[in-house]
Image (cartoon, rainbow, N blue to C red):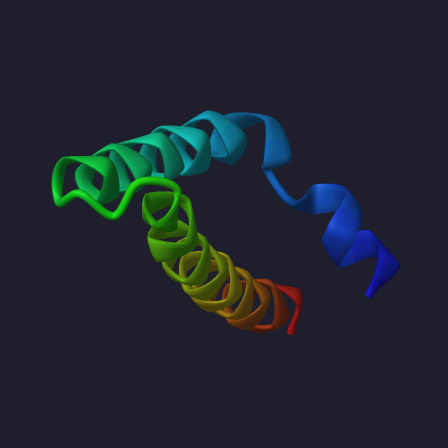
Length: 65
């Protein structure tokens, strides 16, 4: 598991997640949620991170075997 975390492409993925986070916050602000726009984007980002992490781990296990 430690090897898996060392191989994750954090540096390439973080700007994309940051961009999606800012975009969703901006959309929430446009919809007049004020700072609730931030709360609007956080669950989506967490969901995207979990799905991406699971998919990457599945590929890692398949390639390792």
